[in-house]
Length: 414
Ligand SMILES: Cc1cc2nc3c(=O)[nH]c(=O)nc-3n(C[C@H](O)[C@H](O)[C@H](O)COP(=O)(O)OP(=O)(O)OC[C@H]3O[C@@H](n4cnc5c(N)ncnc54)[C@H](O)[C@@H]3O)c2cc1C
Image (cartoon, rainbow, N blue to C red; front, side, top):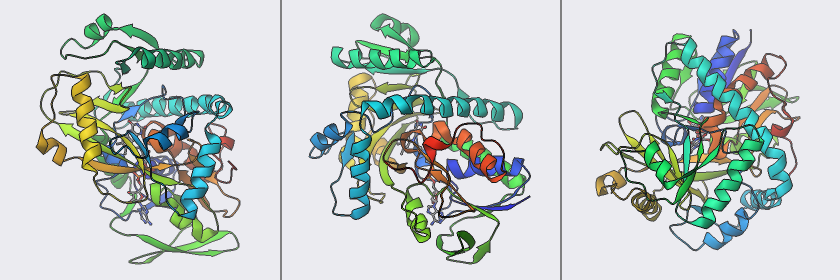
């Protein structure tokens, strides 16, 4: 039995704690927040093995540059004279190629499929009540060009063994009879599922507390004592804590702490927004409005609209133009749904930890023997969380990992 301290109690930190305590380790979670907001609470809740293509795909950098001056674009990369950002942007650009996509797709599939199986296990073995639905995911298209692209993506998914098919306007109506949808066609990934995020987070926190996991909330890890490639202790704004093993699951903030070990973790925060409506919408199947790159999720008691990837440093400022863009996209695809001013004013945001190659960092760096890194999941943190937690536990418990760890190595070169 080891004492493990997890820095960060987002979805990745909680899932790591879950598998570590199951293995019999003593677990402590330290989080600078109250554990009720941020990426792990505002996300679209998709468990989507269908999202096989990493963010760093051919054409994305070019598109990002084109959109740089468009205040309502779904992807925004703010140019900054900041060395960490410039190194990240260089590595991101290098990863935007076909070879990288081909190599990454099976890796993304395997970790997402394993995660989905583990969510099933948790739902069936624990006394959790969170909303979890298996309705698939529609990629709604309004133009022939987008539909053509999405059909190619669906073929790629099929080639990787995932269930995917094209559906026409009539079939969309049959799938979603209670809501008007303005789309010429779609692709449908039947294997995807979705969860209401705050319900899962609340169930997991309650479960971990009852399993004697210690939580220190509103407590920021500010420094580390580090000797002979080992962390001796961490210093928070309130106390010094010692343990045998540490897990860095601090999301978009992770690189501030990794730098203290001499480890440069290339990571940028990718801000996204969500708008909720409690009005009945008639939507039963999650969908991505493909041209607008915004997501729609029927959750427990409300519908969520989410989107944008704003790479502009760490801040939680709400950009009303981008919130408006998500609301406008909603009405373009679902003409009967008009989000109110109040709903838009209540929009919230979260920061996705974005690695340059669209793959997470999971594993130990050569720089430190008792730190397991688990971050950088970008748009897929929810989809990959349970498998990440299990891998973290397997690494610390010195067991054979369920998946090959090389693609996730924190010391990998880009
Ligand atoms: C709008 C939006 C929609 C999304 N939709 C989806 C989706 O449908 N499917 C999907 O798979 N993914 C989705 N994602 C991505 C997913 O939400 C993230 O990848 C995931 O939540 C990241 O989890 P995390 O635990 O790594 O980071 P976080 O949730 O950010 O948690 C990190 C924690 O570390 C704490 N912390 C940081 N620094 C310190 C410190 N020094 N000391 C103590 N604590 C610290 C923070 O307070 C925070 O609680 C979406 C994200 C957004 C924003």
